[in-house]
Length: 266
Image 1: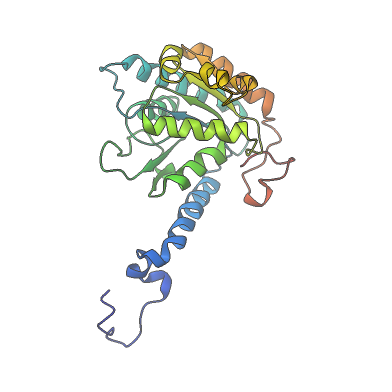
Image 2: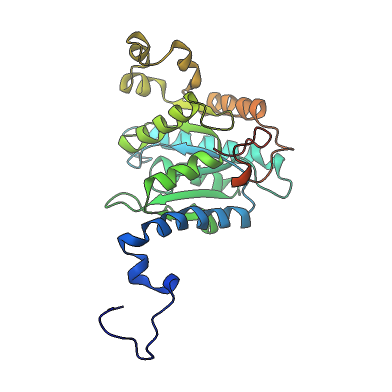
């Protein structure tokens, strides 16, 4: 709306229908809040209690370099989705969640889709690569503008995370989860799996971080390595059963997220 021209009836739209205002810098806080509330309403409506998050590169394709990781992510996601069916009691547990795009993200959503399960995609608007894949449950296909709100929903709902090879985005998400776990900012225990030990040990020298005193030796126990779907599945499900009581954990509730009796959130 051109604010220099009075509307025909002399009345301006109410603020929450004023698109120029809502897209202006002055309304940034409202847009941030919308990226918090809109997913929350969908998760509650779809009865999503918690997730298993898959991170990894958008560039890994089934028939390209490192294509074996695509197939492994698909297989692992299907295994997790089928295993999680036993915990359904009016709400969905350990739902496979990805960043919503192609590559490893598509593979994760595809595996859960092939298992007949609901699956979440937290997509982000980027200049290239990032378009929602076709395997996401439509009601759980989200589009974010703010990276930090997208990462909030990854961390808030996830009870476990598996990290496949990736670049800057994957490293950012992985380090975010490791930092939250290390600093105990998550009101829950988190199982972290680095999938592809050869890749990750070449990319990040965790032992050097210990050597130079940048992390403590015990920080190396914050995560596990896996090189095949069966091993990753065993680590993830063991952690989920050890840290989570599927029959007692309630729906995510922001007001309860700091309570030790309700370890669902951050």
